[in-house]
Length: 242
Image 1 (cartoon, rainbow, N blue to C red):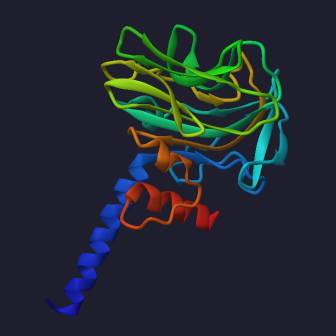
Image 2 (image 1 turned 60 degrees about the horizontal axis):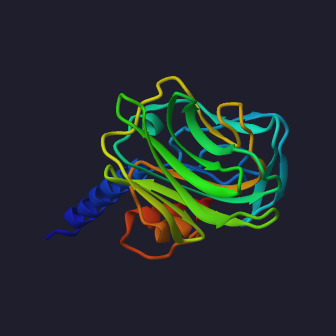
């Protein structure tokens, strides 16, 4: 094959690869001071800051610490975070307040919502997904009681058949489900609250969102170096650039 054709083929495969990768990692918010609340994937899901959260030392770089009453980040509604057949979410969190039901991150609001991480009054983490036009709840509640001041990696996924919740890489809950994710058109995805209610008190770092079910191992690696995997390669490229 002529050299020019080889070059063209490589460029074509590279472009195809990047399109697929970008379609998977829908949003990534590092919350580093320099990045503010911008979506580092380049997909345009930039945040809007509410209140005055502190910039604190994070699990990787810096994080935002929410006061539990007025602080949160709003990601405006978009098809990429609303019209979903499957999804995965991950974040690092460090609670500073416990004892009440709060939302770490949620798309929508009570009786019209899509998915989210919540901390129960007993300190356990739940990951919940609403499915179908009936707004059907699929909920997993873990067994790990979170402690104030400790960092935790939280991960949740829905593959169209079951919802799974993980804390620090360990499966803590699973529940069968079916149908597509319930669409909350026009309602934002908020980090640190339930659309301005039920505020989380604590630090949040490295929030990531995918439009498909991935493994918890892939979600936990902040600097993946494994070649040939479009998910981890994309994440690695983002971390290098930012």
